[in-house]
Amino acid sequence: MGKLDNKIALVTGGTGGIGTAICQRLADDGAQIVTTSLNQEKAKTWKSSQNFDSTIIACDVSSYDDCQSMKEQIEKDLGVVDIVVNNAGITRDGSFRKMDADKWSQVITTNLNSVFNVSHQFVNGMTEKGYGRIVNISSINGQKGQFGQTNYSAAKAGIHGFTMALAQEVARKGVTVNTVSPGYIATDMVMAVAEEIRNQIIAQIPIGRLGKPEEIAALVAFLCSDDAGLITGANLAANGGQHMH
Ligand code: CAA
Image (tube, rainbow, N blue to C red; front, side, top):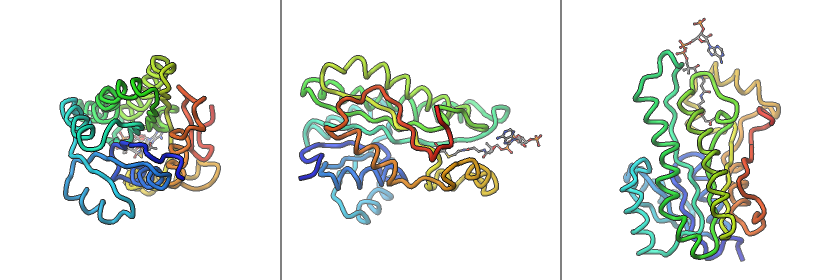
């Protein structure tokens, strides 16, 4: 018996570094996995290299209309979604003096508006069922800010405001809403930071290493389980001690 047997879990951006680990862990715990992808070729290759079954839906989470079509497809083919992990995200780093309006809006739209676009489709299904789990993946840099990330830090901080507000609205309906704030995790996104800068960042992590995607996935799986029914509106940090608050 898995802790998430008979649950349908939607993980946005599930083909990425942290997303893949979350899909794998929720599948190991018994959930049926649905994920979104912008690139169908990449998604097919990804699916064939995983040892669990999944449904991949072409969806740009920055588009409300795409998210609405995604919901209709999932409900037609599979049923009502029990778990939403808002994980999809991008970086467009640059110091503020070099930050143009495109970099700003791409990151706000993809990382923050997506949390509204996706959650809005599924919250009613959850409250009607009297059960649901929403986990929003933020970042240490939404908590402490980061040189070169005014856009990303703003979006990631905004995510937790959303979490706290929605958590209050749905608390009596058996739905929890939480934020997970990973620190620097060994994924392509972090490896894209220049090596010298990345090494300076690693030197600031008390445990002395980058996090592993599986370490974030384990925390997400716990929040999705029945054991975590008391936790809502929380922002759980997993950053190796780099930021404590
Ligand atoms: N604090 C203070 N000053 C800094 C600084 C810092 N952290 N970093 C750079 N500077 C200074 C430089 O010394 C330089 O000073 P001078 O002009 O006096 O020489 C100046 O700022 C450079 O400014 P530029 O506008 O020219 O910046 P740049 O183009 O050289 O680099 C950057 C900007 C690409 C954003 C680079 O700073 C960078 O990569 N920073 C790291 C960003 C980061 O951590 N991204 C995380 C990506 S992963 C992720 O986001 C996942 C997650 O959730 C953790």
